[in-house]
Image 1: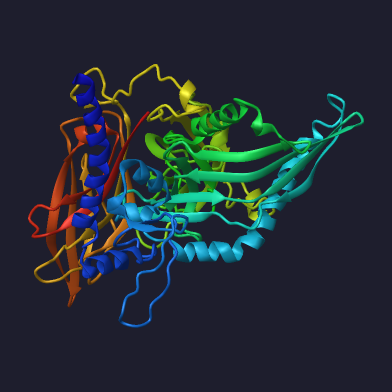
Image 2: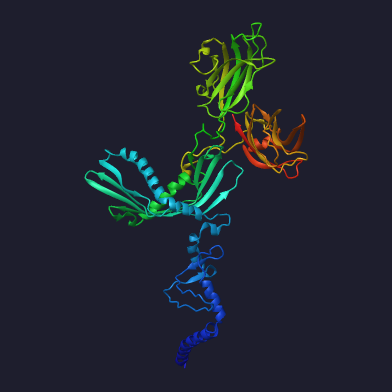
Length: 587
């Protein structure tokens, strides 16, 4: 009986499964309404182009177009393509599809770059030749260094072309920043068909190395900075990588695929990725200068020049009674700020001043100190007694040096007026460079080690800051509204000094972009920097002034952060905002 029972169980199981499958088909699949079928197939026929609204994956569907209102179900074979909505895909299929989705479809803050790809496609034949010519001209001197070494007779490119397929941009981000720069983050892919063949002749053997089928996926960050009023309106380009690039290529040696060697492909690919990332992965950057510093680029201060105007000897007699009332003006070349000046010494040809001044240096190699001696006049223009210049490259850091300079009428050595003796001026100069704000990277990221943490420039007495330079750049303002007029200008008040920008007439959104410098020997960290926006108007000979708002900024915050670039809401203003950039440099 037990054997019979087991036999019946097997027979029942074998018959039950086919019957169950047959009943399930007729109950749930066969009687599906026609409108449901049509709706599903209409979804299937949606094109992949409408990726903005819904993404579909092509598995291998092939159908027929229907021009009339009726809908005919196409014949679908297992080998024909099938399109399915993305929500029907499993996790594995989605992960395979995700890298192929353009960046602008993944992120709403990315822009499409169809126009850029079209431009690049049209320009690619010419860019190909230009880039290859640049590679050839750069590589040939390097090849020449190896000829004659290691039995190498010659090295040259047998063929050099990047192929017919240009790189494509899959999207681009543009970041807004308070800094004076433009930041772009494109997604670049290049699946190219280059043909680069390098021929190496060693003794009587000719070795050919061919690079083919290059694929590069990269996400660079491109920064145009600083923005300047000289074409092309930026002085340099900084390029860095946000992630390790994906690099794949084929390498043929004597027509044999080297990358087919087990283990070599992954080793070479990973080594290249690490080397590229080590030098250019953010925060490492590749700096490409565009404008020369003398053309339009704005240089940062590098130190303070201490000038002591000691005395003058045997100056010219300019007054009626056989004397002069001399004073000295001093400034650095290339600076727009007003010149410093000494006090006036009345009725003397051998004045003694012993007065000290501090000037901000931006280029120690090219800048010169300009000294001009004048005879003060109560009425009319002041007479020029003589001038002289001192190149700053003659100075050594932290070393005081005294100069006794002959005065001339001008800097033209062929001018006969310069043969006349005009006296001498004695000055003492010392250059103190700024300390670095932070350690700069000088090598690959993996080998960089910082031994010291960044410490704010505060002296042993925590209530005082060490000597340094305070740079204040008033960039602009927004929504500054006066009751009677809108002619705004900005005023910076600090340490008893008052400096103001130009006036921009009839606007509520002025743009100044003016820099002020405050050199401090020692300043209390409790001091306050006040930025005030005022409006002025002159009418019928009378001038009216109106405050449009102000903001107070603690010196401690600037010294501690070393750099603040922010927009501040103005006090006593409805909606006014002022944009200020402040930097602290330590001597």
